[in-house]
Every structure is written in C-alpha cells, then in structure tokens.
Length: 312
Image 1 (cartoon, helix red, strand yellow):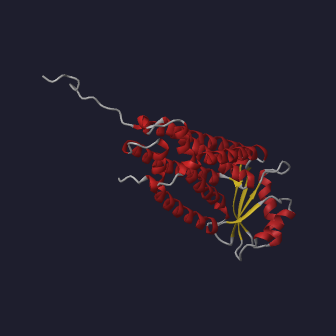
Image 2 (tube, one colour):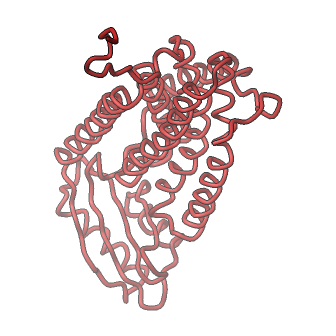
Image 3 (cartoon, rainbow, N blue to C red):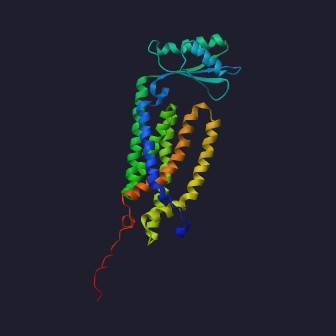
C-alpha cells in the first residue's frame, strides 16, 4: 500500500493535548452528575408493574396519563406498543400498595374513562431481580473491558491495549453521564446499547492500531507522531463512511422506531460520535504518551539453524 506523503497528511495529533484536556473535563463532569443525579433507572432495574392494554378504537395517551394521575399514579410511563391501539403502562412499586393490586387499580381507572379497554397482559418485576440485573450488567461491561485489554495486548502491544481500554472507558463514562445529566430512562435496551458502543468503538480502534503498526514497519524516517497522523489520515475515509451509514440507520430508529427504543437509539447515536472521537484522540494519544516506538512493533527476528556458523 502506498504511503501518503507527509504534506497530504492531516495533523490530528497537533490537537491531542487540548482534546485530552477536554475529555478529562467531560469525564469529571459525568462522574459528578452520576454522583449527584445518579441514573434514572427503568423498571427493569428498580422493579415495578408492566401492564399492556388494548383500545380497539385507538388510544389517547394524554387522556390515559390524566386518568392515571387522578388514580395517584402520576409517574406512570405510558407508551404506544407496536400500534396506536396497544398501550404499555409502567408503574413503579408503591410502599403502600401491594404489587398484585396495582394492576387492578390501574384497570379500574382506565375503564372509568373508556369501557372498551381490554387487558392484554400484566407482569411484575421484583426489586431483587432489578438489583441482580444492575450487578450483572456492570459485571458484563467490566469483563468486556478486561477481555479487550488482554486481546489487544496480545495482538498489538500493551501500550495500544491501555489506549484502547482507556478509550472504551471514556465512551462508557460519557454515555452514562449524558443519561444522568438529561435524566433519560436507563433500562435493559440502553445497557445493550452501551455494550454495542464498546464493540463499535473497539472496531474503530483496532483498524487504526493495525494501520499504525503497519506504517511503523514501512515508514523508515518518521517520528511516531507523524506515523500516527499518516495512519489516521489513511483510515479517515473508512471511518467517515462507516459512521455516516450507522448514524443514518440510528436516526431512522430514533424517529420511527417508537418510544420504547428511544433510549437505545440515543445511546448509540451518542456512542458513535464519541467512539469515533476517542479512537482518534484517546487511544492513539495514550499510546504516544506511553512512548510507543518502531522497536516495540517490529516483528522479532528468527535465527535459522546454522546461521552463525562460519563458512568453510
């Protein structure tokens, strides 16, 4: 592959220190928001009651919310589920009301407003299940980061591994900070989106790291910073095309996919932007700060048998 001339190379690393300062500020702001506001946990984690009802003539969500507010459920989440006739109602647990009775109270309130409403299903998620999901979800992300650290260290070099894991942790913390700051509901779909963000960002980082390693072996007389700039420039077309196609799909999901996956689409949209940014300015910058060099990435020389013998 032909190496780009240096005059055609974008000097990404020129801004690595301002970018890292900006990222550090965002990380501390996200941690502060998580400490103060915490996350707006969904019923998947907190427990509660899920009720699905059917309105043959179509549902008026605002009217349903007013009816539930009058029945002392002002915080109930009311959403269409698949069609305008199907409605999904989520009610947080109440200390003064048994979980089994919440469904009956909700149905009585709805029937007062519309006698033709029909119960489709009712489910209860206990708080113990929610605590287990929270613990298992955090453990899943931790295990994913550890496995990525080991994989990248074995495939490339430990400096790239630390940069990759640093970029992934950066993406996860900022995404959690966004949901905490805006108080968006955090449910299982958002957790799945976080794991998808890790995979997306890792894919970008692996492509960049592979090109950096290849150019370290090809380019003879360039400094590490110049080689990183060359590698980032060579992969930029691929990164832009991949990001744009992903964003187009996620925008369609956000606007046409329904309220149930708004959190999923929001997390992925933000994750695509921040994952592309971290692959350029976090993973590569950390590797440079740790002193990655040509010698670290050159393949070991293999001595053949009899190589050191003097000729007769």
